[in-house]
Amino acid sequence: MTKMSIYEKNHRDDFKIADYYRKDYASLKRWITLIWVTMGYAILFVSFCIYSSDSLSADLTILKLFVLLIAAIAGYIVLLVIYGGVCANSFYKRKHAVAKQNVKRYYRNLSRLEKMCKKEKNEQ
Image (cartoon, rainbow, N blue to C red; front, side, top):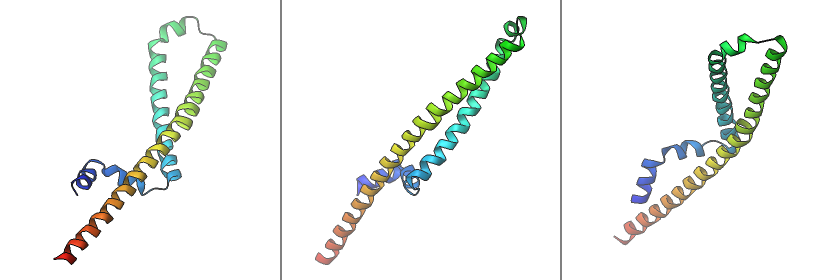
């Protein structure tokens, strides 16, 4: 009983996670991760451009600008595919599986406790 109470107190998110289907939860979290990665990449790109604006503007040509933009876009796409697509998806699928397993264990223990309480009532 104490173990279940501690679990309820410390792992409230597991119940929310387990309410979703695995694919739905992983997809939702992957999209959120992709949005945050995009925002972070944009902030880093803008800060890089501001920081190196003197050196870039000194000898900048259209070809160098084009190559720089292609490299930035390619880096962004690689980052999205690797981090946002593969890593985030597998991480959140695993997180859902663990939460589902923990909630299943919790409900199994809850049913055992209920049976024990019924047994005690019948004995009295």
